[in-house]
Length: 573
Ligand code: FES
Image 1 (spheres, helix red, strand yellow):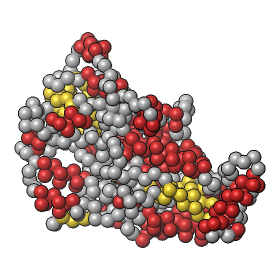
Image 2: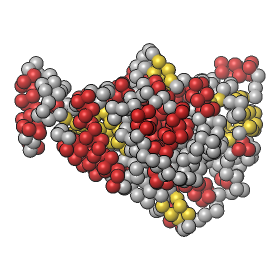
Image 3: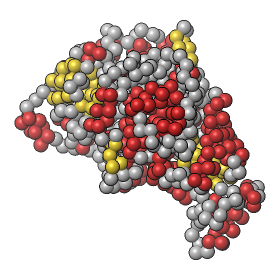
Image 4: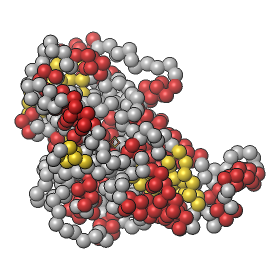
């Protein structure tokens, strides 16, 4: 039973008479058949992010039922409530544009509805970040459950899975190496089950980071969406939410600077999505913690990529799970982790690692002395074209392009790119460097995942699979290639990409962390003074105006400035 402050007593509507507010609330909710006994229990909110538009969340109804079962077995009252649900392929202009809206929706519902703790059910790329941002701000005891990865499928003799293979096959189709009939067949096989992308894309990266952060029960990151264990994990999460409500362990107790460092260490070790950095900057920003990109670069130097998953390696998420999942990774990474961090289990990460199931021989998680990639999966670049720090996922780059100079071929916007990239008359050669600008947080708007600029069709037809590409936008975590991202400030607000002209020479030197435009300082300054902002930076009303007026750059998480906690009082890693 809950006391006068908990359960249905929480957040009473303001009528100036608390007892009347409770009486009215109970009168209405009783229309749904609840008894006084049920209404006197602690209340556990459960976010229902099912949507007919979101295949990555197709199993949410079953997960909700399992969470409810866990809550009720522990003596509580589960209350599911809907929030915005975002799928990568069903969000115009981009899911990133709507992530902050989802975080605001979730935060305000967590505050506005009575609940003693909350179970957050997310999965697709932007949903888990939005929920963790919301939980950090609302600071109500919370536990993260993910929908889990899809199983891999087959095409002929080949194993395939969204979405690294989506891009690979599309590149083959653009290059004329597979025909219309085959690409249609592949389209029907790439996503064989419900669940999130089956490679180390953003969804898988965020799931692993959420577990490392301590916001998820151990083992939850990798269980396939369609496995029975996924539902048992959900049931256990519901039961644990009841204990969290009692113990009042809050997100601010869990999401500390050292815990965020653990999550970033895992991001590097899984060869995770660059988007994970942007999202973690936003989550940290909600608690007044600044992500220090230079320290993260240094951390990368000593954190090898250990997980052999696409797009960096060979395997899929179902293989990672069979290989032991995060338990196998934590065992290897232990010397690099902050073991004293508290998790939502009530124990420290170190205590959880001590209690891990026994190790066994497997191929997916490599030992520290035999990594998939050493020397940092993600590098931070400096130089006159990197601005405040552009990034490159070097573990997904072509080795021969890590040090490269070439002639810039500039696209002024996404529209310009779409119009000209396949033009047979485009002046481009395989040694050139493709530049896309005005595609950042404000410029696009919404910082789309367009950094994986397609290889111009005429070069793709010659078999060219990779070129150096630079932009102020993001890239899907499932993509691969020698791709520089997040050049900031973005071009639309006068960042360095705004001053590149087609024909300029650009030099990329990843080992030395340099990205430079080979013009004199005087010429750079002349172009800067002559620059005029593009017209697109304006909206009169609505969410678009809020977005354009308040969105921050990638290093602050592309969050809205008024949602972050200022001033920063700590930094990480
Ligand atoms: Fe949802 Fe990839 S599209 S996780």
